[in-house]
Amino acid sequence: MVRCSLSAFCFLFIPIFVVMLLLSFSYERVVRFEPQGVPDGQAFGRRLSMAKNPSKVAKWASEVEDLSYPPVNLSSVAETLRARRVEVEDRCRRTLSAEDLARAPNSKEFLISGRFNLVWCNVFKAASSTWLFNFLLMAGFTEKDLQKSSSSPVELARKQAYARPSQDELRAALENPGATSFLIVRDPFERLLSAYRDKIESTKQKFYRTLRCQIQQKAVQRRGTRDCQPTFPEFVDYLLEERAKGHAPNEHWAPYYSFCSPCQVAFDYVLRFESLPQEEAFLVAKVPGLSAVVKPHKVHSSHTDYNAVTRQYFSKLSALQLAKLYDIYRKDFVIFGYNATRYWEYVGAVF
Image (cartoon, rainbow, N blue to C red):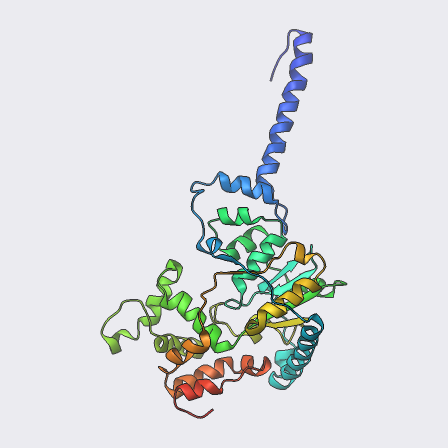
């Protein structure tokens, strides 16, 4: 306890001491506090600058490519998306059982932007890095902030901006007046191949090394070697074995119908990866204020022509492997209107 013998000294010292304490407390709040849901971009930038390795940058942050949207007939795209929504709803009713349709949605994979009244389910390997980047911009981050980050986009989004919503929170967001919900899908087998090439065939992502070695365990007896680089047929065998065991699939190749619940959530717009530039341009123009934040770009794009490379990989499968693999993704093909005929041609079989 401070004891003052001179009243004049106490009169001056105590107010100064109190002010210094208040300033110190305010500084701690500015640097450390980030409101849940929408982070303070400047505070985040300062915290990044204090990191042990401020020069370490996540690979995806250096893979942002600026683009330009093509000329778009908004009314034509609107009609395409309206018709697609009707088709998806009809196919859901014809494809899923009443029990499946009554299941609660998988709310934890959704991102909700209260600022833009926008709801999105993140389908990995379907422009997911691009739209995680967009949602981070929508949450108040700057491109400079993101370039400094050493975290992956999904890690950054979930830890700093968008907590996984509960079913009640998702329901409230979808029922909010003026809310817009959307989903991006692509050919299920092209998406699967993209995941294999990025996570399994490539050895750049160390996080997946354990899984690569695990997948190849049973293949060692057949090949006599173990290099932790599974072939595509070995990867497919792993998927089939995991399904037979009743194990939940990895998020990067989980089927759409269970991962994003498109038959339980009536998405306003179902965008297709194959026509994404036009449909994304429509979405950005449709949501009030979004065009001021979200600009046309791609993040972590492989520039691979998957129409060409699918034959190279899928022709290595047996007809039996393909039939069992199709059974995993059949509902996705049907619900979203994708044609699987060419894959049977690749293996010399009839669909």
